Image (cartoon, rainbow, N blue to C red; front, side):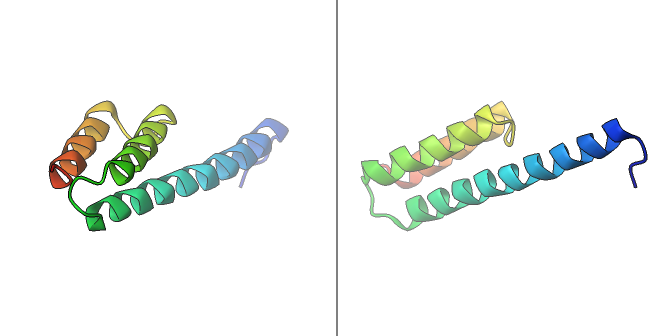
Length: 80
């Protein structure tokens, strides 16, 4: 357990960041699932999936190449 005041604050911050990352990760997974179950050529589902992936990348939840790979995979699935 944290002892110093700064360590306690850092722990509180890490808990908040962890909760936000979990929320962002869940939103991304939901968007990808929606895109996978969507019909071929559904540009709205593709746009939502891209948006979720880009936000996860921006927040540091995904690495650059992982995000690119996931975007390519979902685009290939929805290709008309």
